[in-house]
Length: 210
Image (tube, rainbow, N blue to C red; front, side, top):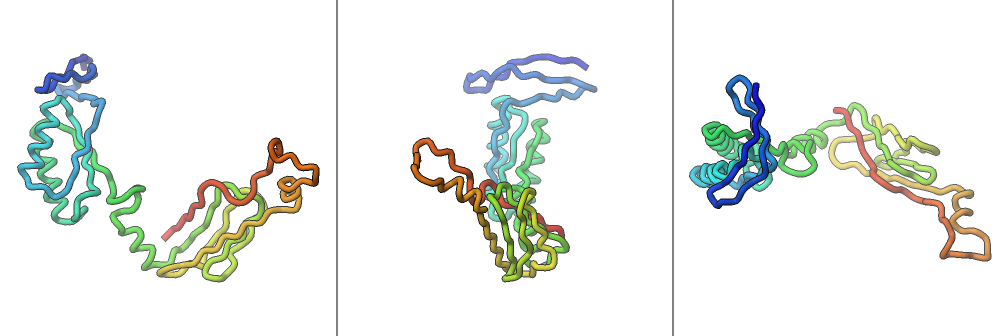
């Protein structure tokens, strides 16, 4: 095993920072400072190969395939283009990274998760709110799921969800003590009054097990 540093320079004369490469077993593993996106839009094969070639000529040994613009993501057309990308990258000893979904956030699975949820009834489900002041009551499709008076603000929705669309209602109420803190008795000093938080803050998350 040996460790060496090298300068990378592309044909335009632009010099990149020092790159640290590790050689082990005759194979050189180079770490890149940048991983440019390779935008997939269904271009012709010669265009895809030319784009990879231009990146390689600049001394960059890895690209990240950006799948979102492709009209046939995960379909035959997309896989055909990926075969071209992988073939050209292999010739140039380049690594390929792939953005793992059609939309942000990942986990969308190109719409399959959403479709599966709409077509099936979850075996378990619960709702979790980050910050609530002070009491939270949750109803699903007109049926009360439960009321929480203190953290953690988490309520089980098991047995209340159905296939298709569901109506979720979250009601938050304060307490008399918090109301009194927010609306003190006169004389008022609104410029220096430290008001207590009220309502809901942060994220609301729905966890589903199919």
